[in-house]
Image (tube, rainbow, N blue to C red):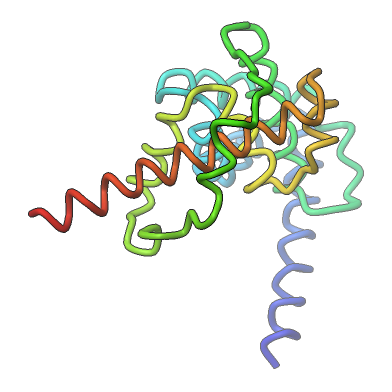
Length: 195
């Protein structure tokens, strides 16, 4: 019964989204506002994962929605609108990061391979805000690859193509990101034990 209800809910949401998109394409400002309000919070969370601070995330969100509205005609109703918007937002974040050109990708795997045994220690008790701060505190290269691989589900080959780097560079950055998180989680766990 739950599967049927979820399917019906998804069908209703897709119809609602189709109506909203059509109204936006006709230039209806109320529909544009409704579309923005419906997805802005979720997409801001995506931006926060990629960008190093709140202001950059806000800028990426605004730029992303400008692109969403300008490319809305390309949305073919073949998938879920939220997924399409997410791709536009992620690409906008990646474009902003590339423009800064401060992101350096390091290829060496040697100094992180010993730290890969287990990263999940302590994560179950973290609040979402704490986890977001940890992700935001990562160096750019680590954060970008971690988000693309662990959260968005891209392969290292796809990440390499998107970022214009070698596939091994993507793997290296992901391993470094995991090691970075593990070290921070161990510090948090140690601090909590001493309090």
